[in-house]
Length: 109
Length: 117
Image (cartoon, rainbow over all chains, first blue to last red; front, side):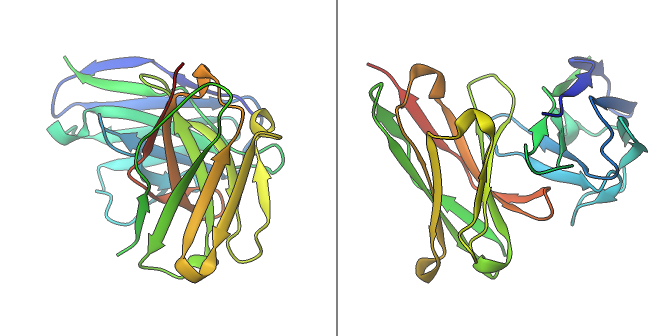
């Protein structure tokens, strides 16, 4: 099973900041990496798939990058509605299947 | 628009089983996999498996093999996830999600399954 490790666990930031979240895979993923945003009491929302492609309706301030085992989600100019938990997910190979990172919480400083 | 509407919350005793439904609308049901993901309170996301609504083919995470069954009824565009032999550790919110290659495009609202004696 591919293990996904996100860092940091929590990020305390201010509105307007540029935020960088990291996700590391235990083996190379090629381009099969997605990012999700989850707010309290809500289902996750797909932000980025294929490492860097924004999902429909996702603002341009969200961007994804990386390759191999190291991936990054960047939020340029954090807005109040962006305070949430962010998860990366790999969908590289079946079997054994997909796995998520443990999440990074972006909170208000 | 795409909608996935799940069945309501369930309370079960240890050893029982639960079957959660996921009614899909707004797209061609048989064209996209349905995945199931669960989340214990305050914890992260855990992928359980996928089902191809066209063929009925399934793939389950090893952790759940032998305990989970994913099925569908194409006539009513509904997917189902049944989990048997429930234990307290299965207490979680269960989500269905429409899948692409592996990314999860649209999610249901979640169904709380509580397991308690």
